[in-house]
Amino acid sequence: MEKLVIVEDNHEIRSQLRWALLKEYEVFVAGDRVEALSLIKKHAPKVITLDLGLPPDETGCEEGFRCLDDIFQIDSAAKVIMITGNNERENALRAVQSGAYDYYSKPFDMAELKVILKRAFHLATIEKENSRLQISIEQQGHSPGGIIGTSSRMLEVFSSIRKVASSDVAVLITGENGTGKELVAKAIHELSPRRSKEFIAINCGAIPENLLESELFGYEKGAYSGANSRVLGKVEYANKGTLFLDEIGELPLNLQVKLLRFLQEKTIQRVGGREDISVNARIIAATNRDIIKETEAGAFREDLYYRISVIHIKLPTLRERGEDIMLLANFFLSRCGKEFGKKVRRFSPDSVKLLESYEWPGNVRELENKVQRAVIMSDSSIIEPEALDFSLKTVKGGIHPFTNLTLKDAREMVEREMVIAAIEDQRSNMTKTADVLGISRPTLYDLLKKHNISKPLE
Image (cartoon, rainbow, N blue to C red; front, side):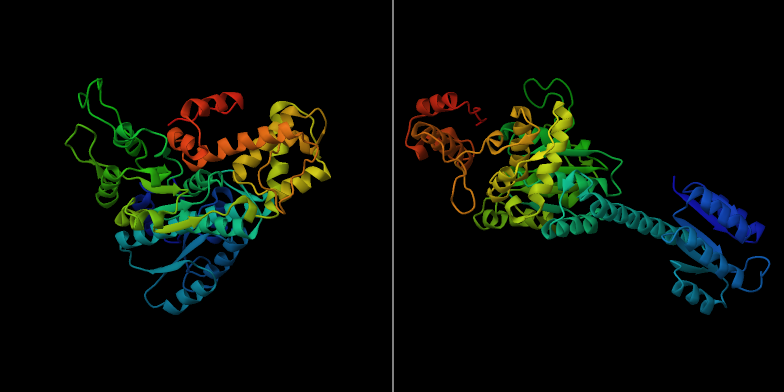
């Protein structure tokens, strides 16, 4: 429960305000400046109501202004609501100019005062979270959610996170695979008023279409064969929290319609059910697709696009983040060293050149994977290029860093990379992958086994 300090010299008014507000706040009352400052130091309330006429100057206002100055010496972010008489508007405006959040004139309309207090607490909470994120970025180079970066592109992302976190609007996050879309979604949730509730994530592209509806909306007992009990879906589990729809561009059109209905009406129906169920969940969606092109092609509903993209955050690729590459690499090096009990200290100069010149098609996820492997495989406290296991993928300038390969090794590397690239391009459709490579499916599976490539889910 939020803490509220009421500073009022009139005993009856103090008691009236305390009893009227006890259900909403933890209320502390003070009758003079000294008592008020003691309570504020002890309890650090976000919001304070302050009567201008305090003893020993009950008929004046200077003791009230002195108290206001002292409050800001203790907590410059406190929201102070000045309580004045009807004929003290000039003093009230002077107080606002001195930093007070608002003023309220006696006599009290409790409903009106409660609205002002609620708004003040809301703003105080937003400012506190924004300040916490800013301090985190400036001091540590990362924001909540594990996002690391000091580049201008990432500072823009952090700024967007701060701005959207306090609202309930839908957010669409776009960017290549491995750029940290889910981390951004979690950071928004952690800074939002919903942070004490659930953050529920679902990958719309990883679940077969015939199961996705049940995963999203749940199902009733007897909805289909094997449905022996009622099961809640991800949307219901996210009630009062945040629902993160990853790879929303993969959502089938029939489910896009049902999702749109939920966004419009805030109600769902479980599979096999007829009851409308109210759900209050914030929606954050993400995709690596060009969603506007998908919309123009008819693969994604235009009305749903506008619903999920009230705010659009576009994440930069790692190759666009410049100085962040080594910041991230050193962070992963330190973390992996501790995790695996390896005494690794730094990257060699050649490794640094390689890390900075590589194009990073897999973005931050690929960088983390490379560093993790290097820590595990290295026998030295210094990470050399060989431990990073770079193959023939693109390096800026077109020059591969390893020149001591045999022709056989080079062929093997090219073959492996072509298979991996084709699988990624065809989104793990093995029939299409085989066609693109000009081989049969059995030959493709032989290559997967030969090069120790995990068979993707189709």
